[in-house]
Length: 220
Image 1 (cartoon, rainbow, N blue to C red):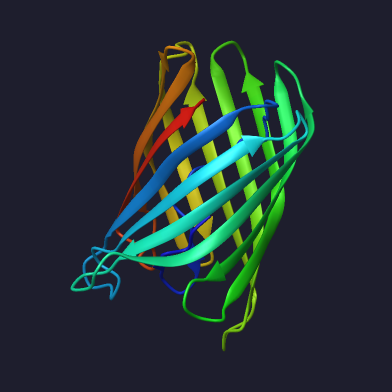
Image 2: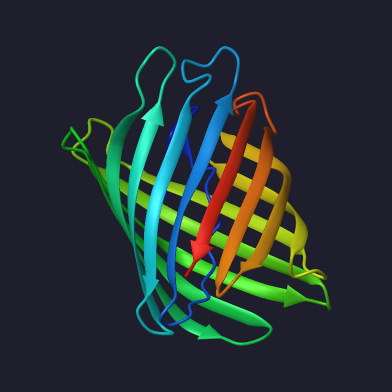
């Protein structure tokens, strides 16, 4: 998870993590976000997360990420490294739950962070699914070392396995956003191509104005 967009608190507009795991799945991809917030010192900031993950068992997966940043007037550069671990408590047709753990380290600095929290997915009625993440992060090696609570919710209409509209909420202290998203999956031979795109709008005066997010991944 990356935290590129800051108002008075940090907010991750990122993929919303599923607790579901399939043993043997190898996934490569990129997750990106772009901030459009006039008046903010981070306006036009772009952040990309290049990732490779593997389902070690049906209960445990690991992912290695490389986060890159592009600030206005500066070159595209590597910002930090991350290791993400997901442990699955249970998963069936109707629901799944797990625990997320992330360790991150700045590329050039000394700051690091640990993030942990529950993941929950629930199928509602026949064609509706809700995915929820509640995460707590603790930074180290910075002047402002404190706990940061963030949450995200994705509600999707799942009648089609190929194309699903969704509504997403992202929240942190003094920074709350809501907006639509598109989730798509396309079978390419024996692999699965996953595409996501969304836009989130600030809900109050202290929130970022607009954040665009996208995700492209391939399950091999």
